[in-house]
Amino acid sequence: MSYTSKDEAAKEAYLHFHKNIRPIFDDKGAWLPGENAHNDDVDAFRHAYTSGVFTQEFTEGIANILGHFNEIKGQLKDQPDSEKNMDLWNNKVGREYGKKTTSKQELAELLQKALENDELIITDDQEKDSRKYIDEGITDEKVIDPNKPITVIKESDTGRNLLFLNMLNGEIMTNDVFVNKINAGDYPGYHIARVDSIATPVSNADGSKDNNLG
Image (tube, rainbow, N blue to C red; front, top):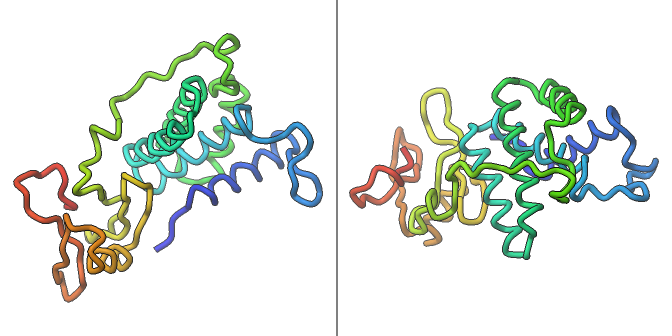
C-alpha cells in the first residue's frame, strides 16, 4: 500500500517550482540565497500542492483534517494567526484543484496558474493581503474522539479498510501496523476481529455510529 507522504509531496512541489516557476536551489540542491520557503510564494505553492495531492489520494475531507492538524501543531509552537490564515487559505485552494484533477502533473500545472492569477496568499502580512480564510468547522474538538481517534482514509475496491489515520498525531498506518498497535495495547478503543481470515481492526461498541471504522 503506497501513498504520498507530506515530505514527499513537499519535495515534488519544490521540484516543480524550481523547474517551472523560478530557480530556488543551486546546483548542489541547497536553497539559493533569499529562498527559504516560509511565508512566501514557494510556501504557498507547497501547501496547496500537498493538500491537492491528499485530496486526490484520499478525500477532500481527509485532506482538510490533515491540513488543520498541521496548523494545530504550528499553534503549539506559537504560530502567528496571520501565518495560519495564509496556510489554511492555500490548503483550501489546493483541495479545490485536487477535486478537479486526477494526476499530480495536472495539479501542479493548475496550481502554477493559480499562483500566477493571485489565487494563493503569498505573504503573512495582512496589510499586503487581507483575504481571510473562513473556517469550515473542522476543528480538533469536533472531529476527534480521544478514545477513538482513528479514521479510515483508504479502502480497497471491495471495501476493506487499508489505511488508517490517527487524527490526534497525524500518523498514517496500514492494516498490519494498526493491528500490531492494538495488540500492544496502544489503542484500547479498538479490538481485532477475523474477517475472511484476516486480522482486522474493529471499533469497540459504545452506542455511537460516529466513531466506527466502518
